Length: 361
Image (tube, rainbow, N blue to C red; front, side, top):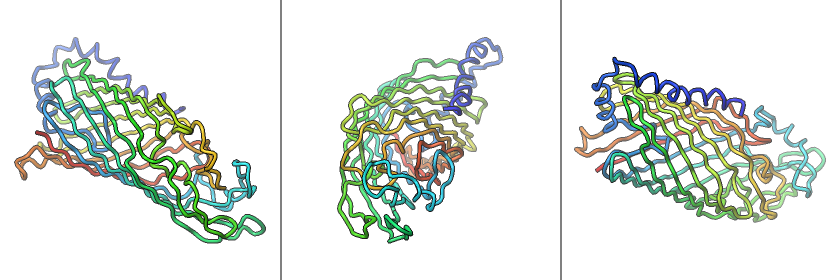
């Protein structure tokens, strides 16, 4: 949370400056007209959500990829040999951690439909399908702790459905505010199993740790606030805060989460925009537990989840309307971690890639 103060200052600046800009005589209506026009063909970075549509329907498909490799302890890199010296907190044998995650790939497919009956109201429904693959190494429980071998686990399922309403609350001069209320239902399995290599050198079918489960079965409320500001004819600056809280939990649930995004977008030409984004996420650890998840691996410990992370993203959106005669936009965004102050022992995030396509009609 020590990084939150800096980012909150970024978001609060438009609020503090709104009163000043209201009284600036040189704020012309030409800037306002251009802002409304640019909303028609300029899209937010493809990796963001909670953004308004402007009249009519829009259907979009996004594909996300994330890779994690290696491990960090309280934000610092840690070698496998040191992980093997850490105690097994699950209260069973062996006494020390003996299975170590090496690499993880996650893919998310998101399909959403937006309908804006007016320019100030957007309704949205989105479904998310997730698939996860992890490679792990198993070490002997006793003596020299030799590597016994590696194995892979995987899971996939429909992860969640969300229903959202976004409403304009202020639209004056070159600054626009809108609020978001979203109900999110986690639908997929939370007890998928897989074949694992145990420290005894045998294979066993077990319930996979929390990180490999497609969902936690929880119901959540997401509240968001978004400010878009036109800095010049071609440059806009947007700040967004979203808080996600579990309303109904099962035996275990991922922690509540605060996400803050701040991005600058440059309209290079009418069909192409580029963006740079800062993404801050602060999440609590897992509440509750599944007593059947008790392997000697870090991902079986509910305390090894959540933390504070700061990422930087670079994106581009291209309007295809000149080629397809439709209101089609394709987008790409790549994010890299700057700070990973994660709770306890976790895998290290390497990068995220999001590809997207949307059609308005």
